[in-house]
Image (cartoon, rainbow, N blue to C red; front, side, top):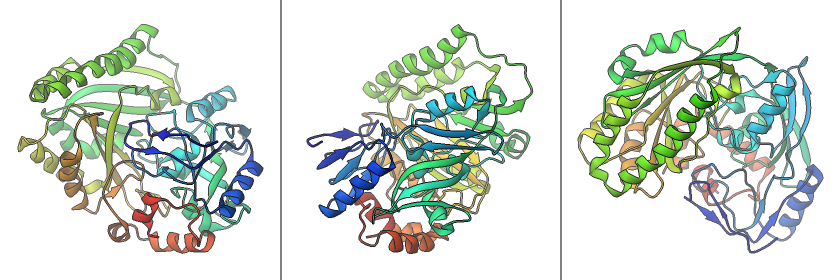
Length: 433
């Protein structure tokens, strides 16, 4: 197909590729890659568009994985599931649940494709369980020469370490083998807590909970905390009405209206946030893990997120608060803070260090450049690593200073894609040409 325009979910970037393809199997990916190479077109695979950067934008061949979305196999005894690249996380969750299985951890949105989520470093929060890409046991990947390689920790190990969170820079991932486990229940406990108390109790809150995160309302001293822990049950899900009230009406419909008011009357935002923070009420429930990890997010926003060393989090948030105290920004969206253990993926934001993630958002249509720039300066002052799929201004010169194995990843890229078939403007900036 030609004459197609593709947009990111948030509207931050658009792409007008010269050609669009939707391969239905790995052989179709191979044919599309070889044809594009022969015609001098660069290749990018898109997902659901939930990245805020231009990581998926191309002026060449854009591959859509909508027809490459099957669950090939689920083997609970072996603890593995092999899934094609375009399968959405929510559909994978359903397929696993039907077989009594689940992913160990996931992020808070489940509409992304599995390949898109893992290639950009999507993560949740966890004391001992890392991001989704850390759960990959094997990759089927189509390289620039059209060859299909199955890689794992034991086979093509360097390619595996670089490509399982690879930004699409090493080839087109056509299928993934994920680690799975028996389905489990989570006891969710959500309650307001003053920011000062959260920061004072951080070591305790992180140590005592398998999954801890909190949302801080700018211009206030208030947070909403979330603690999720495994439980043998029984299940006690929210009633249909409470789930609709909290997760649809309040968190989406009302929140959309609040943000529209804030966009029109920015000076009212601090007062609005005070009201919003006081309106929160505690809740507890027990449900299937994927139902607790993810929730619907229908209010469109623009986001920047940085991974900072966990030991610097309290100081970072105090610096962020000082930025707000200067009175130059009015922000209606809560700041989200999550955690991850150190992992060994070369391009992971949590590579080699205990990590705290600080995500800042603005309602779509709100000017964000000055706000993000001020906070980015805070994050980079402690060697922060930007989320690959969220807005940032870092380039290769900076990233080389915070990723110890970036040089190794670039060496793999030079070997498997020396002509940069899978490059685009974003990769030119963060990985070099």
